[in-house]
Image 1 (spheres, helix red, strand yellow):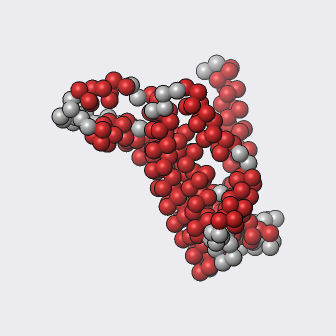
Image 2 (cartoon, one colour):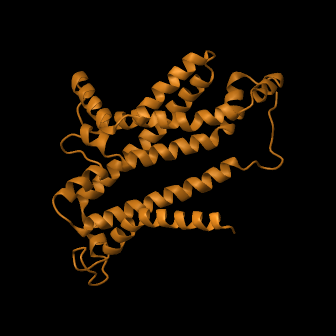
Image 3 (tube, helix red, strand yellow):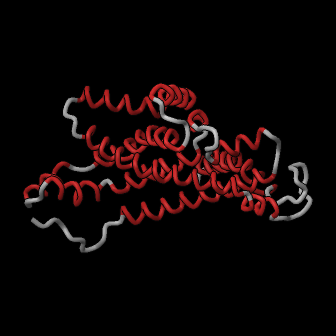
Length: 269
């Protein structure tokens, strides 16, 4: 290995150390019996028991997962449809305009998006709570799914659909047996990205939650403002482990989806 290779490895090690050191620090002190983060006094699972004994917190966890799963599933369906619509646009200028409008929603500050949704829901009379949070999460997740699915559509050769038509396949068969299987990795990527964005989102959710309804990100922020408690460390550790499981699960699902089975069946007229 050359000098440049060694320097690259050192650089990557430093970057990952900087990124993961605060997380490791947080996880380490989630087992501290001292109740503070100044010195480690002894190992305990007290803070994790406190998290699981908090009924209100468990309800908030349930709310968060319901919102994340529903918004991810709906935004994936809408995003796939939107990506296909953009893909089939003939005029280049129109396609670029649609892509720009889609990308604007991704790069826009979350504070602006959250404030906009708050004004919109107030104007049309939607009560802040489950519905407002769900709609806002769907809205900011759809562009993410579009970005994940559209490149796979652009990689697909048009001759695949032409061959399917020559074999007598209809539009529905082409969609379900040619297009969707080909873009399946992008669909999974979009779903998991939307799921993680929904679980982690704070800024937009903070604006559109009402009294009596909350998600984990907003709850952690509220508890952190009241003072340092190692139950926050325990809760954050559990969220981090869940995120790791999602990433590992996505890796294996994506690997299985991209694997071409030997002797697979083709289209039948």
